View 1 (spheres, one colour):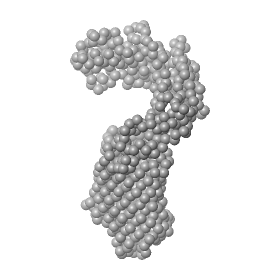
View 2 (cartoon, one colour):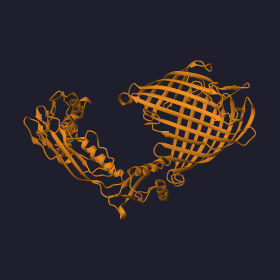
View 3 (spheres, one colour):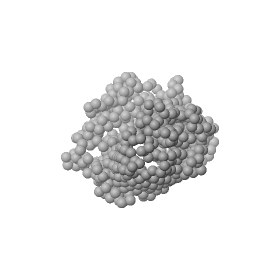
View 4 (tube, helix red, strand yellow):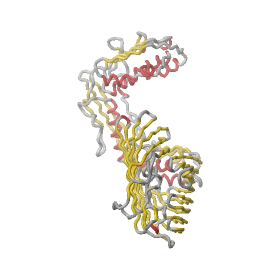
Length: 628
């Protein structure tokens, strides 16, 4: 019987009713029981007390017929074959594996559409299933497995119904196609999922008829569904204790009581709670029984995460020197799943330029305006000793962040910035009121080591000058990345990146140097020195108002842990507010090595300048994560 809920397990239970002795020495399976499933729990316990003599010399595996793909599938399913490959030769392990293989090989035959097979597993010439469990062999020299799959069955009558409007069953589940057992399961699950998505949370199997006709080698699979009533969300019932207030959990979850049930909505409820970081685990279950008006309560179990976390990081460039980063995080600081985080960074240690310092803190408060909208407040202090300017800056702001589905994140803030700057234009004081905004769309499979998907982020920031040295305008920055993997397990990945920047409404002399664009270094053009591409206006060197960055990589996994990369970068800086070609380009290229650690790849890039007059010699970069 299929039990619909958060997961399903449809197996051909009705057809596994027994086994019969066939001609020859094997066990003939028509639509037969998994023989070992009743015996193996006892057998395994018994064999644990037997000896561990080691004498396995040979494992023979044979298949009647010339089906190489089926032979490979069955061989991969065999525990005996796997034990031999991995060097396990203890008698107790081999005998237990032989008994288990009856069930495993039968499952593999069913999965490929073979329902009349003969499986023989002989242990030193004796059928393993005939060996008394109380007189198991003291040693095993040879195991011989022979499988006669018989004819491949095809679907005769293949139906699941009734179906919800718009349901599309798997393509292979129809009359005349190979009768693969998993197709019955997946078709039933697909039909059930469609009913649940339409609000019928308690859809169940009303009846099933699965019949194999060995004369015609056909399998009839007819499954009847009972959708039940349309179900509506009831109450969120918290079943476990938490340091987070129950009222805050309910507000963050945002379960829409009284609305029609949707599994997608239920998953978003759980995901909102997970995203706070306050919980190590979140489980949301549906009540077994419906309440008044076909309402269904949702049972919530949470486990609190550790409240504090400390992290460190490092990155090295042969020209920029060493960058050290650290953060301290406090979860659920006020009991409402709030998150307080402090970040610190020291960069250009031992580099060709002065050392930079940064310290920032941010408090995030979830679900302040609806379940999907969070509030935050932040503050930053920074000292920058850059190639073309020296700056001391302080900034603080408040804002809102909102998600739209699983892919889109947005953010808007009101910020004040004060900075004292020294550059070729002299000592200046900047004072800004700004409205930084950010929107991103992310389909990557892995943010640190993507093999497919794309990522786009746009950051428009209107700024308003509050001092004589400060102008007003709009800064826009965009970052687009795309990934395409191919080959086995995406062992080769093509990665591309486009960066765009523009500042309008203010002259270069009225813009804080940290707002202006530069090119060169690990974030833009590897092989060119850090912030080496600038513009010169009236004899004054500074950043530009327009920027383009192009990067391309070919990433290849050589082994499971080692990868290699070929890359090329190019960057453009111009004095104009939009790209018009009047500025200058430079480029770099190189080779990289990646060590694929569990937390992400460790990166080593060796790059050299290709075009432009901003740098010479080889540059080396070391860090965690891919370059982009």
